Amino acid sequence: MEKSEILAQGWSLRELVFKRRAAIVVGAIGLLAGVAALGTVSESPEPPVARATVVESLALPIADATSAAVQAYAHEERFERGDTFATLLTRLGVDGADAVQLVKQHGKAKPFRALRPGMTVQAQTTDYGALLALRFISGRDTVLGFAREGDGFRVIDEPAKLARQVVLKSGEIRSSLFAAADDVGMPDSITMQIADIFSGVIDFHRDLRKGDRFAVAYEAFHHNGRLLKSGRVLAAEFISGKKTLRAVWFDDAEEGRGGYYAPDGKNLRKAFLRSPLEFSRVTSGFAMRFHPILQQWRAHNGVDYGAPAGTRVRATADGIVDFAGVQDGYGKVVILRHHGGITTAYAHLNGFAGDMRKGARVAQGDAIGFVGATGWATGPHLHYEFRVNNQHRNPLTIAMPAAEPVPAERMSAFAAIARPLVAQLELLAEVRLAALE
Image 1 (cartoon, helix red, strand yellow):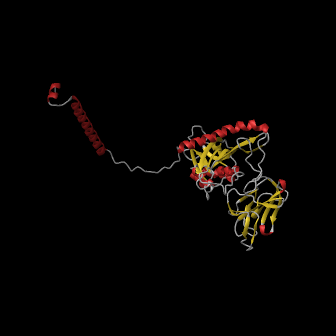
Image 2 (cartoon, one colour; image 1 turned 180 degrees about the horizontal axis):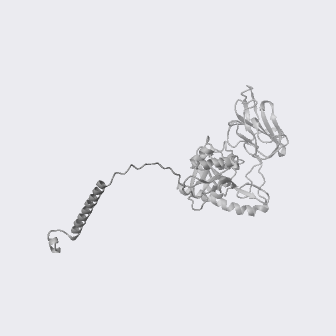
Image 3 (cartoon, one colour; image 1 turned 30 degrees about the vertical axis):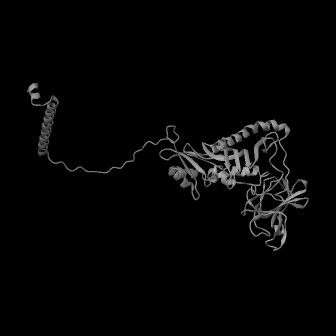
């Protein structure tokens, strides 16, 4: 058939080639079928083939967990109350064999003993669960854990590498200092420091007013990008009405001591704290009152502070223990002797803190006991007395002498530290004012 005839019939060259190839394939299949049929007819039937099931273990290549080519995966979990180390490892995706080996090899090691509920544990494993390393931060800024070493594990016990950051916060008091601090995300430890810094000047039980403001610069320490803890207050400001108080921390290396001072070098620390409790309320002042147990009117020669049982009681000044024991209506009481013929008494305690034997020295702010209801007490509270030459004085109103200022020869070193910190406090104030406009 000529090319012109093909085209006249409406067939293309491609269609023609396809038809011819199909015819060849069909013919080949028919030929094979015929051969198969002839073969089947001519051959005698074969006996059935015996079948058997074969099971054989195949050795698969296992990657070395210590090899640099192994992909490491990070996992993180909190050690919860009620957890065991085994359940923690399971949540971290650690292979069971490694978990057993770790407990068997180091079951009495320090990391096991130091792990506490609430701690965050980080683990590195391979994609098939082999443990490469396990770490957590202990309460003493130490990294504890285990790391793979050959066919076993070694103990990790090393100082944590902490990154220090200065944090600036400011707030306004609407109900309490703690509530205002919570509003701006400030930790309680910093709030307590602020109250302690200004405790010789401000009575946080009575002097707080709605609208009072504070600003603070403090340390924060991070480990691997995670906030680990808050540190020391470096500078603080408290504004109440028209009164502005500022404090700067000065760590005098030459003198071997540190303290908080006003920007002009005056010591904010008074010789005596206004209150032996960080936070509480005055339930009975220095005045005549009707005694709830004796049922008669008599002079109340001290101040009562209401607080939960077990609240820490602190020494209001440096002193020496003059008496620690049980004394009639005072119950368990500590009496401290100070310079200038001054003594302070702390009564109705439920227990003593530290070495409260007669003659022991205590520093201002040291814990000396805990709030209780021993002696003539109708409920947990602290009875506090301030005596000058054995004469009772009202600790809420008596003028307290200030501690020593920055020595004149150290003022230049103090100023170099104080200036940038005060500038940060002023910057906080400007930012706050700009936000209110």
